[in-house]
Length: 302
Image (tube, rainbow, N blue to C red; front, side, top):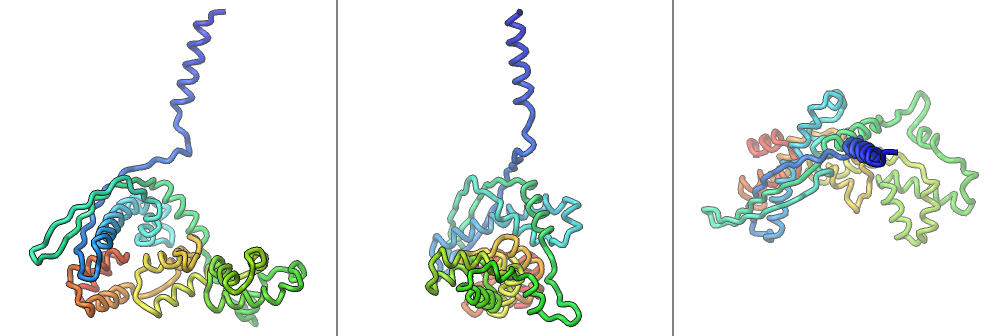
C-alpha cells in the first residue's frame, strides 16, 4: 500500500472538512458609535460617562437595527423600527470604549464616548421573528362570557392541587392579576409573605395567569405615574423589580398605545422645571429611548 498517498488523502479530506463554515456559526459584525453628554450640577462624573456610553450604544443599536429592518420579512411584521432598535440593544457587546473630557465655553464638563461593539444582525432577526410569532391579542370574552369566565377556562384541574394549597392558589392568582405581577414577581411576593421557597414554587406550578396581559397592564400603570418612551417601558418590565420575560415585555411594548411625542414633551418639561438647559434635555430624551422625531417634537414645543 502507498502510505504516502493515503496520508495525503487524509490531510486533503481534513482540509475540506475544516474549510466548510459551520451553518450555526455567529456572523459577528463590528460597529462604532459616538455618544456625547454634558455633566449636570446634580450628576457625578461617572454618571455622565455612563450616559455618554449609553448614547453611543444607542447609535450602534440603530446601525444594527437598520440592517435588521431592511429584511423584508421584518418589514411585513407588526414590529416598528424603534421596537427593533430596543430589542437590538440586548445583543450588542462592547469591545472597547474611550472616554474624552473637555470643557465647554460655559465651564461645563463635556463627555465624549467612543465605543466599538459587535453584534450579529442574524441573531437579532431570529429573535425578533420568535418574539413576533409569540405576539397574540388578548382573548376577548365571547357572547355571554365575562373576563372571569375566560380566565377560569385555563385553570388546571383543582384535583391535581393539594387540598391545603387550593385556596392559596386562587388567592395568588387574584393577587397577581390585580397587581399586574410577573411570575417572578408573584414568587417573590409569596416568599416575602412567609412561604418557603419550596412551598412558593409548588404554588407557582399551579398558578395560571395571563402573564403577557399582566405585563401590558403594568406598562399602562407606568404611563399613569410618569412619562416614558417605549424603550423605557421595555427596560422597566425587564428590570429585576418587575421580572417579566423578554416575550412578555415585548408583547407589552408592541401592544401598548400612547402618544409618545406627548410623553417626550412631558419628560422634557419635567427636566426644564429642574433648570436643565435645552441641550441637556435633548441629550436626556435621546438616552431615555425617545425617537428622533419624538425628541424633535418635545424640543420644539417645550
